[in-house]
Length: 149
Ligand SMILES: [Cu+2]
Image (cartoon, rainbow, N blue to C red; front, side):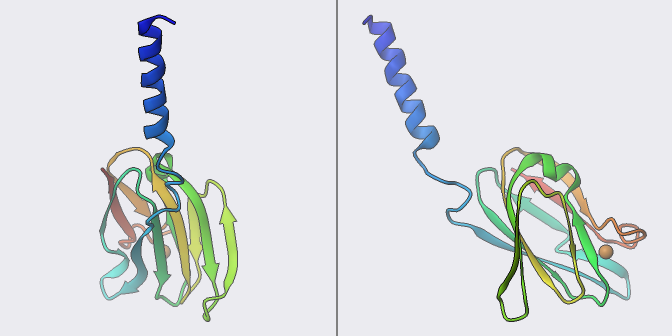
């Protein structure tokens, strides 16, 4: 084997180690981020108004609808920039009701309910909008910005 071939083989082995050595990134050190969906005297809201995520970091977005009507969260452009692991819904006692796996881009949350969205950002994103797409809700203020660094 030539020296250059050896060097390439060693380099490839290093790459393989660094790329795959960290294990399953979608499950390790999941950061919980809370979002409230609701309405008040000023209209409707997603709170906080701005979210910031980092590529390669696993997140659990806990969406709590404190309202008396249903709301939804549409990821829009953000959907193209993340790996969605699953969406989970539990009952009032915390018992799992549903775990939905796959590439989900929009979730409705019933009044008084909480749904959890598990994902890992894989690409950067410059201040895009996530919204409630129920007619009139975005216009009433149900949107927030997302930046992925
Ligand atoms: Cu809404």
